[in-house]
Image (cartoon, rainbow, N blue to C red; front, side):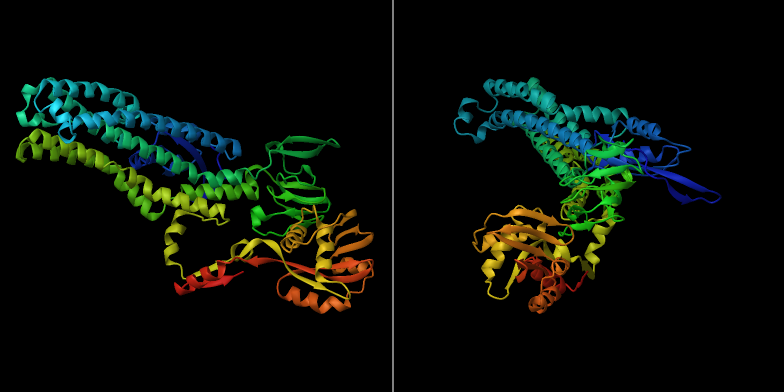
Length: 606
């Protein structure tokens, strides 16, 4: 279970009470009835203010009064309901452990499914000999041969129930111990009723009318177990996909940090960093926690947090965000937010809370599902009695078929999983694309939107710069200007340099070696190519080197007004041209915006 979050204050009639929020994992849930049962058990716990259980996240969000309840009492309430509380964490290792557990569960379910499916084939074939050419003559109706074969089918069906279907009986027993019922109760009773009827019909045929011996239901027991196992495996797979976005976010976190302690640089676990530590970051490393630069300059790739493709220059006094990647220089910063207080940790928590939240329709579904299982069992019993009393002959067969069918077909898996799975998958996919959805309520009310605000970078545009223009000056040609600029930037990790190199490759321009390369922070780069000194950078660099750029000023201003990033190219102290890059518009952005407008939604870009 997570350590309790920062307490929330809630107004009381006389005093102000601080409530604590916690998230706790739960093992053993199978359907919406389980969700309802656990929520009721938690809400009955003294001190618990609210409880929301998520079937897809296998977790509960609980708010409680710490003076009346604690983690242990909440875990005990879950155990008293017949389920297993498990610890959850906010690190990648915890999510990886959950993923590994889900993978093991999926493999186990599939092994049981294939075992049941393979045995179901002969069981189904020999249960209906009258429909298979050749079998009808070999085992005619009412013959001792048919009775012996059907007895063997009963033996063959037994391992399907006892091994492949063991989890249904275990789940039913656990539910009965706590005087409740769930999906497993329906399945276990249904397949057992079909099996027991068939066993009695074969062992004691004299107890039944002659027409009642026309068929047995071994196949129903075996096939239902196989199909439900396959469905359960798909559910486990779907649950794994819902947490995939969280795992990707968690893997953005650094594992270690280099801090200054007693005048020495040492590597420690990122969890051991405390507020006020001086952290050292070198080129290519992840920023481990949030902080403020106190020494050095660099550029940092913050695209994984902000969505902005362009690296951000960092100087003394600037803030840095944990999980971002340092690009060129080295710097030191003072940690200001660590652990669960960092921006990345808050984003992860927001996605978790959103996936565990319930839309209004889901709350209704959970209430209905809580009474669904006992209602189905009562209806199945009533149907059996009605068909046995008023149905046509052979009444026992029709009554049994109706009873088993009612139990099996009414399993509330879809009822409990359809809504939360669609919500969590939607919220998870949104997080993968940089869209953070606050809650299920927000997603459900999205159909009522009449206006939408779109961020430009990475949403309307591609999210990465590309070469757009090459401008030559004097006697220089465009290919020459681009060849020199790309040759200078070859090997650069800066997105502008990478865009320039890719642009040259697209035009099939061959690059040449560069010597004496030097990066000039905040200005550009320089080097020697074919014996010439080449500069590539901004206005500041050109002015510092006393290079006349008057002939290119109008072109530079035009490109800048178009939202592009122009860079000067100078050869041996003379301005040779410009190369410009920009984050270009996605090809599907215009059609998408047009479609939103056609739907009557106002579109605003920021």
